[in-house]
Length: 113
Length: 108
Image (cartoon, rainbow over all chains, first blue to last red):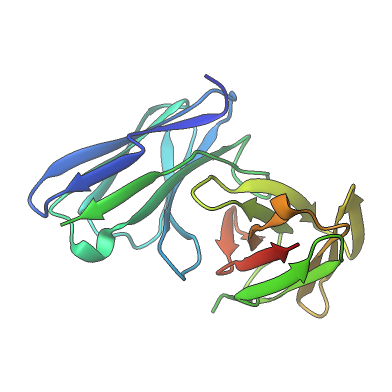
């Protein structure tokens, strides 16, 4: 595997379910990010991790819970989501935080029913 | 507040030149990025400007004027595969703030 991978690619879940999104980067980077991409809206930054420490939580509801066990892996745990949470969730990594090129994964298309 | 504006949609002809504009008003500035995103795919890096002026990379060029809060992406010799969304993003305090993206359709 190369670059940034995400699983699953598609996910349908009910509002009472609990699921997790997984991201893995094979680039040796120290910073990882979660973004939300909704139709007709800009990419929204959700969380930033630097060396496994959360450095940014962009006013995201607590029903989204990130976890970064090491610098290569990032999870987004989901529970009691709302239909408006349906979106494309993108993971990205960069060498460090700051004005550095970010490499994006293919995303997980989430539908909340 | 933070505000980044791009046109929502543009159409151009194969072989032509197109310029996609981006204006920004942000509390801080550490550089401006352009990304390309094909439908259903991940955004991929195109260019980065931190100083005023033009950066050229093959068929793509990007320009920045910090005093005007303005950037553009110039695509030359358009190809059908250039049909995609083009995202302008400003780096500020360690994070990227994205515009809504410009969807470019290239027609034969």
